[in-house]
Amino acid sequence: MINQCKQPFRKKLVRFSAVAQSAEIPSPAPLPSARILVVEDDTASQLVVQAILRKLGYEVEIADDGGKALERLQRTRYDLVLMDCEMPGMDGYETARRIRQKETGVLNPQIPIIALTAHALQGDRENCLKAGMNDYLSKPIEPNLLARALHEWLARSGNTNSNHVAPEDAQSIFDELGWS
Image 1 (tube, rainbow, N blue to C red):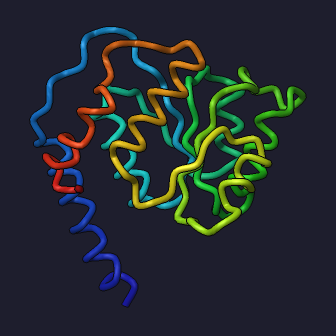
Image 2 (cartoon, rainbow, N blue to C red; image 1 turned 120 degrees about the vertical axis):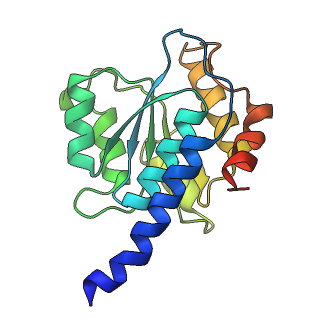
């Protein structure tokens, strides 16, 4: 029974992967790219966000829970975190609070954190900001909003590499991927 349920999911992931790999967009210039940590427990969401960010010209690493995110942030310098709020174990709110605490030992407690969550209720944005996140985007991901938020927060943190797709060009990537 479980294998029957997994089969359509696998087909969908393979289709997303094939579409993402076949999309024709200009290759980013060979400059250092911003490194983004995606903290997301859902495999399908991980794959979609990872494909989008790579098409936009970013380096991407995934942590599937808050504890793993903290471990990575203690070892590796990232430019930005995209944080899912609802995860088993340590949720995104608690993870963000701990990132902001210097005693946690993360390399950059002031790293920009953008919430990426299915929650779009009144008050959710404020809860994200109270937890220490800098911004909030709801799922499903709006390509132009994601590109603008990344551009804005990376520029604020001093990462202004020119090898990323400009926010105004982001929609064409999603049109090519069939995700618009």
